[in-house]
Amino acid sequence: AEGLPVREIYSGCICCSLRLDLIHTLLELEREHAPDLVILEPSGVASPRQVLNALQGYGGEIHGIEVVVLVDAPRFQAIQDLSIPLITDGIHAADTILLNKIDLVSQGEISDLTTRIRQIQPDAKIHPVSAIRDDSISELVDALVRQPTAAPKPPDPEMPAAEPPADVPRPTVHTHETNLTFARPIPAEQLQDQLVQMVGELAASIKDGGAKLIGHIKGI
Image (cartoon, rainbow, N blue to C red; front, side):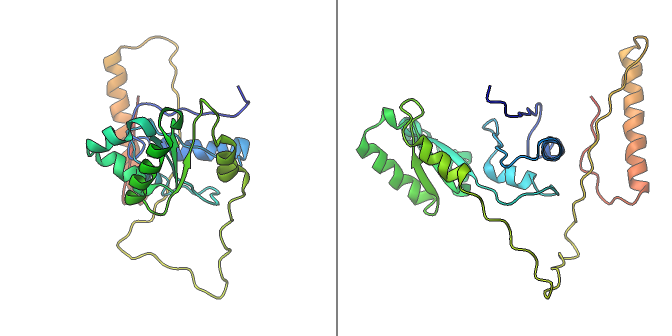
């Protein structure tokens, strides 16, 4: 509605099967729109650390990454009591924590929740917000969007580039999508057999080209 480009990535986990799709989508957004800001919103089953790991190998322009985690104020205590690792891991990884739905809790409860969150992640910035009452939303936007993120320092020409250890793989990512159409319908079994053969031949060709690791080849 606001004229912002949006991409949706389906059917998989952002930390493994969707990793190349994520990188391909980011490169496409960069090429087509040159965005100042990209917001990645996982479905809720991927932890922020998994998303950060999925960005390894992305060769585009990134001037800074801010991990924003949403905490449901009225339900946080009940959720925390379940001891779900994803919840704690998400808060640990957060740079900014949004304590949401503060219209449903008292000021004393907000203070208590802030203390509990600080026990898990003492360094994160905590913003109590309410989308219903529009509490602190403008301040949040100022903090996340309008303040320019410092660009990384240029490399020192006097300092040699750090070489990764020999046993650490150096990621190189290439992703392509090809659509095949047929003039006449063909049996599903025939298509499946041809797809298996095509993927096998592609894998063999990549290995012959010197690749030491093939992360993912998929035919749908």
